[in-house]
Image (cartoon, rainbow, N blue to C red; front, side, top):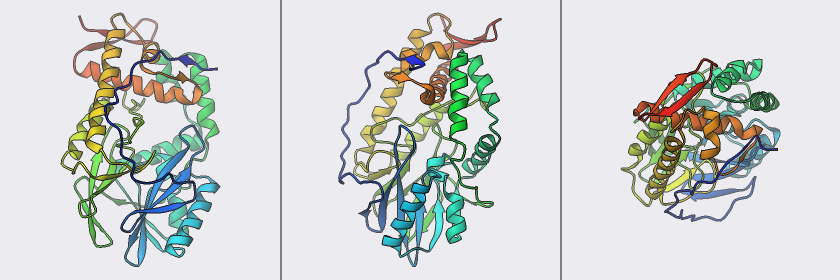
Length: 353
C-alpha cells in the first residue's frame, strides 16, 4: 500500500528530446562518438538502469562511473572490457558523484586493475559519510529529521527497513583519490575535457564536456525526461539545494545547442537547452503549488501529496520528503515562506502575508 497518495499537477514539458541511437540492452555496448562506448547496467530498484561510459585513452582506458555493487554489474564489466578493451588496462576511473550507482564499484576497479579514482573532493568526503551510515545502520538522525518535519511512524519505520535492506551498495571505498575541480581541463586520448561542477542533486557533481567532440557527459545533473532528485538532508537542514541546482544551469548555457548529451539515465540525447528550460519550469511549478498550499501552516509531510503525481511508497518516501523540503527551503530563502517549530516539536511552513 502507498504511504502517500499524490494529487496530480500538470508537468511542464515543452521540448521533445532527440534520441539519435537505438535502445541498448543490459550488457551491450555501443560507440556513440569516436572512442566513447556506452555501457548500460541494471539497478535493483524502480530506476532500473544506469548508463556508464568507457573511453579509449591511448594504450589504456578511462571509465566514467561504475554501476551498483552487485555481481551482475561486475559480470557486465568483465564482459564489456573483454570485448572492447581486451580486458583492460583501466588506468583511470572518473566518478561524477558519490551515489552508489555511480561509485559503487570504485573499490573493485582499484583492486582489479590498479585504477586511479578521480572525483571532486566534496563527493569523496560525502561517500565516506554515507558508507559509514550504511555499515553501522545508523539512520536515527534521518528518522528524527523526518519526524520533525511531520513524517508518521509508518513512514520512518519503512524508511529504516528500506535503507537496511540495501546494506552493501558500495564495494569497499578506495583509500585515495585524485581530486578534480570546477573548470579543470583533463586530457583523455589527446582531447581536452572540461570539468563542470554543479550542486543540487549532490554537493559537487562533476560533468565532463569535450568541445572537440561536442559531447557532454552530464551524469545526473541533466537528464532528458525525469528530473534528478533535489533533496534536503538532515546534515544541512537550512540548506538550499534547489537554488544551487538552478545556479548550475548557467554553467551549461555556453555549450552548443546541438551537443550530444550522455546522461546517466534514459538515453543519449540532443536538445540540452530546451531541457534546461523545462527543468526550470517544472520546479517553478512545484514552487508555486507549495506556496499556495502553505496559505495555512503545513509540515513538509503535509505538502508532499500536492507536489507528486504518483503514489509514494516506502522506497520513494525519503526522496519525496527531501525534495519537498528543498522546495520549501527555497521559498524560505527568498522570503515567501516562514518556518516555525511548534509546541508539538513539528516544523511548519506558512506563506508570508
